[in-house]
Image (cartoon, rainbow, N blue to C red; front, side):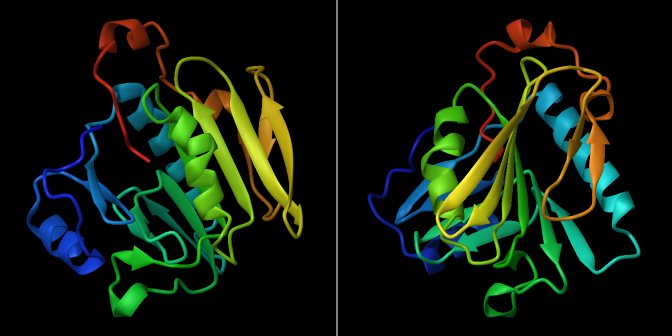
Length: 203
């Protein structure tokens, strides 16, 4: 990922640039970081999870968003685009902008080589400053493997891992389940090598 040339941007400057940009960028405490296009496996996994989750909660008081919706993390001064986000009740919008939410309950990220360390560490730390945030899933696109973090108390999180095709992921904070077969539907792991340097920074 490359940082754009200007050394420091305000959040307002970032949003103005993002409105006119042909591609999405994240904002991290003054820096604007362009996001490369996602791989086909990334798109399939995120799309599968979004579709099943959105259908499951279609008549309930939850709303599901894909990576077109931006998240603002005020304590860390970060704008980011989670791959899939679940909001309980009504979404809280930042400054009445319906493209920026503030109150995620569950966040799902599909890992890539360039972002997996950031997603597990600094980004997870930033997400934990959000009062409504209770559950975090990290999905590997190179093999069947999912890490599920759920909040168990103040500054306490539990980890569960999934790596067998016949398993199903059950969310802890809401009543929802998805099989790994459905999650990885149409994913071809052999594509990973051919995509090689096509790094995706989605999420």
